[in-house]
Length: 421
Ligand code: EPZ
Image (cartoon, rainbow, N blue to C red; front, side, top):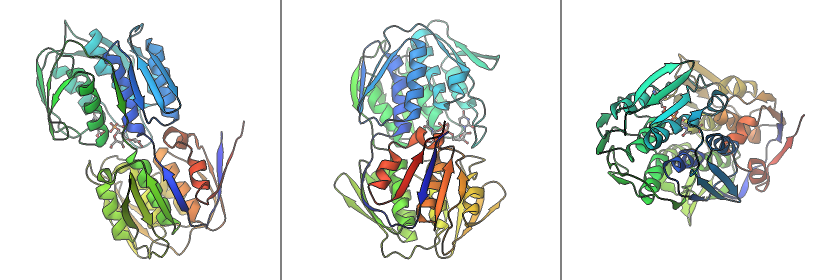
């Protein structure tokens, strides 16, 4: 398994361009199951999770190929309606095929995703919403067996709590139902909005996009489309925090500031100066006094849970204390023990709050990546730490960060990948 070695202490200075969002690409790829015509996506990064989704679509009989940043999906020869455990357990977004397969073929067998490092992550709300549209769902042998007599029927459903995946799954089912579906309390993440916009480009009839209520008038079929994936707001937030923790300056393009309001507010309060530039923003911390700042993760447009670990790393080097509260997932502090090994002063209270007391400096150490965002938090800490840090299990990083070493080393970081058999 590969490792990444970083010698810290150099302020980052330079430009970083962000491509399409991982968490937009994955549901968009699944939307390709809704039509037999080709879907062409632009601005697509090269990520392990996208390769895994291609593997899943291939196993269903779909065409899925990427050339540079253009990804083409076509499902005119679906030969299987089963999403197998070995793929779904590797990447939870695979579960999103349930809605589209049901809507287009009336049947699907999808492995339950199983546990995940950051939480139990049930899919009960996905199933509740699909049953409301007429799906008959049973669970047997670790698989969801779903089918519908005839076609799914439009209905009304209110999500008891906001769920990104649940919103995406049922949205992709509702576009091909008979009748009209009203979805209330949907997730407002930009990746959900991007999916809805792509579905409309494919001929879906959706109103209320960007609001808590979607009204979807089912159509008989959808056609192909071309769609440019929105920039990755979490990757952009990550690099802004990299500028902060190294007391450097980065121009970050490819993601509009509008997706990052809560992150900008927290970084500004912490002392990082965020300024809009053409097609992005700059993060300036060369003369900053970074101060402890409290954040609580919330559904969009609140502070994103996917940027919590990175912000905690930044707060580890701040003056004063920071209270960080994680409200979305029940076990998303696995990066804490690893940061503490680097000299961070962090105390976890219960399961959802951590007090970070900033230290003058972190020290390089051998650490282990625990999950996608926890692993990039270790990279940030290593960039600021005195000495050398070796991060193991970096396959977590490769799931969601395209050309991380290249981007950081182009801005002055002393970072290299050590490939091990
Ligand atoms: C998406 O996961 C993202 N993944 C996650 O990003 C992100 O952290 C999460 O949304 C929240 O923003 C992708 O888009 C591929 P949820 P998802 O359904 O859809 C509970 C990353 O690092 N819940 O909004 O699985 C659930 O347990 C990843 O890129 C139910 O209880 O998130 C969690 O506590 C990590 N029942 C909360 O809701 C359900 O049926 C939010 O989950 C569904 C969810």
